[in-house]
Image (cartoon, rainbow, N blue to C red; front, side):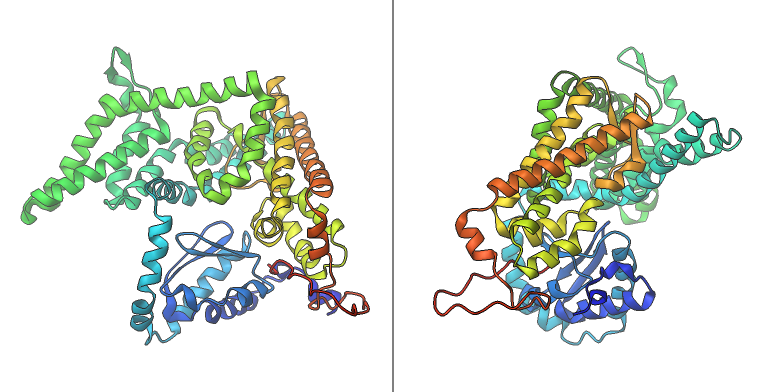
Amino acid sequence: MSPDDQSSPHDKSSPHDHRATAAAILPLVGGAGNISSVAHCMTRLRLGLRDRSLVRDEDLRALPSVLGVVEDDTYQIVLGPGTVARVTPEFEALLADAPKRTADDLAAAGAAIRAARKARNATPFKLFLRRIANIFVPLIPALIGCGIIAGLNGLLINLHWLPAVTPALAAVASGFMALIAVFVGYNTAKEFGGTPVLGGAVASIIVFAGVQKVEVFGQALSPGQGGVLGALGAAVLAVYVEKWCRRRVPESLDVLVTPTLTVLVSGLVTVFGLMFVAGEVSRAIGDFADWLLAHAGAGAGFVLGGLFLPLVMLGLHQALIPIHTTLIEQQGSTVLLPILAMAGAGQVGAAMAVYVKLPRNGSLRRTIRSALPAGLLGVGEPLIYGVSLPLGRPFVTACVGGAFGGGFVGLFNMLGDKVGSTAIGPSGWALFPLLDGNRGLGETLAVYAGGLLVGYAAGFLATYFFGFSRAMIEEFDVTTPTDPAAPATPEPEAGPEPGPAPAKV
């Protein structure tokens, strides 16, 4: 294989390449008849499958454009940021054109498999977290875009450049955040089975300027009080009121009575209860985050940075999304994300150590070379599922690297150098445009960069010295037959065959 053949699949981005990627994936997931739903997030193509047994996992992982696969409530194919948003429409177009004569047969054959998997994974807590993620994840692109514009505007203001433009940029950056409660309410009602616009209508009460004329417990409400948590609660209440009305209101009056009662009842409860309660909870979250990093920053950062990769593996990191959003809405940035991002730095350092420790495993080293750029930009799935997790111990040492990086950033927060992110989603180097702090942009960037370097170094050293047993070296440091660049070595005369290398991602 020539060096050109080993280039990253993301170096080419023509529509033809995206169609080719979609066309290559489709037969490997069982064809059009095996697909029940298609969606995507920032990095993954998420497919609902009728029969999981029809998926050819190894062939799918071997595709150059595929960075990894993840199994959850959907089958998730990691394609990387940007690429997935372009491949998904092409994939949907192929589904629309493909015959689906076998769909019913496939659905019947896969029903038992789907039921068994859902029974194992659909715990109430995980289902709740998935719903929370489904509410907030669609908002991330707007958060990123507005966060970058806000950072650019702050830089222009500090440099005293373009004073006529900065007010307009401030409006562009702040408009979404001023109305984020409405979007949360809309998505919440949609996720919980209500009418989305009614959820948005009730949530809009929270940001309406006129609420300042209402007194609750002797205090006047303020626009935005309760924020996204209040919007979440208001929209859930609206859904339950709406469903109650649908069961009891005659069909002839439903179009008039149901939306009226839904907005009226849930709106009054929001004004006279939820806004105040959610406001107190939001304030407590912000105060606790500030207190934690001010008094135990290094220790808290060490724990958070070290535990984040396991939280991602278990899907529990989704519980942090509303907390991040609340902090951004309340304080302008979330101080937790730069610390949690250090987990990715530990993962990168661990992968570099694996690359050095296994010089003869060409297949695994090629996987690391292709996945490392994405890892540096904060997309950690390829390195997790293709390198550290299959090996076992390097996953633990990657967490150690994340802990030290998180402790470094947390230490500076404790010393008064606050480092936050104006949006959620990116990490690694991709987080630099979104950083915000209280000591100037230069110091903020330096602290975050220092944390990344500490995470890389700690992850590398922990993995190099403690990530491999002698038996693991003997098993994995072998010349793989799939590596065309591997130097020829004489075959041993006798002895057991070496164990297989981790699957290529």
